[in-house]
Image 1 (cartoon, rainbow, N blue to C red):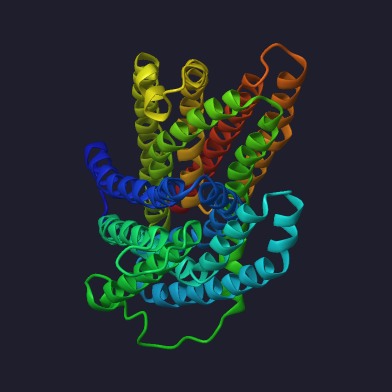
Image 2: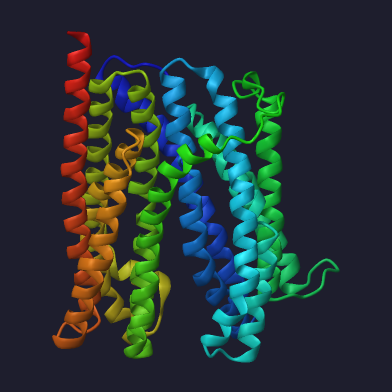
Length: 455
């Protein structure tokens, strides 16, 4: 990261940070995609087991990862404020906290997993695969969350291209291990869906080890000497990270879990409707990587400027990020409107599912427009270390407005399954409005404080 002096320079720096993040997010999400697709090629039972396991693990993983994301604004503020000596301590405390949280998750999973699976009334074979898949993933929890801390440190320095390269190196490792362990190739046992979990666990260990090597040997990371000093545990540092991270994690959890809830509620409709819904939701999730990546880039750039007390520059980055996200959303919306038949054909050849999926994809356009505001604004607020209101807005927009309204529309109107999408679109639009108002207030307050200090 470096100081910029014009909108053109800011736009260029934001783009340089954003593009590698986008590639990284797409690569990370594709790991779960390959787990599912390759397991499906093993058998329908393996596919069902991995799908159930993923649906249990994903909300937990994204929520806990949100807690680790607090390292980014913390480090960005230190770098922007010229306090580089504080960075190693903050990162190592983040690693300690990641390990403790990982152990708690493993313990909680050991106690709760089997009761959860038995309540789901699954076929015994599907339950066994889901259980084995999650058991294998348990061995990857510590390296996954520790790597997240490393990634936040790397990204906070503006070196997002490095995390992109690490992730791209790990992707073929994951695919190769899936091939060997799911299908039993090259002398390895055929583990089916459980093999996908083992492959992911090994891959996450590889990612963490590669990242650790980069931090110790590659500049500008090596100059911080992260492992040269063994810092004692600091509960005050943990408290600071949790104060930022828990609202971030809960906001992400509420967002991911509401879509899981909608999918479960969709079970009241026929198989064709459920398949069409999943098609549109999956494609919308891919498009969501655009505003999400911009959001992460804004946390870095805004945090850097706020740390340096350059609040006008932070405000300009916020406007650039939201404008960029809206422009991309409009382009994606127009493209989706014109090419929804082609998109639907990517997922299914079934005529009934195809026709219904085209209609769901139209609703996905409105998702993109609201996400283009709400998601970057959240990233900007994290750069200001303002996270509590965003958490409250996320909860209300999805669980107080979106899901109840969707259930009413789906159950008592002719919208049927589309009612859930309408409800979530309305909730997301309300959330985007609330978050935008909050960002404006935070920006104005920061500017006012800055002008007071200057005077």
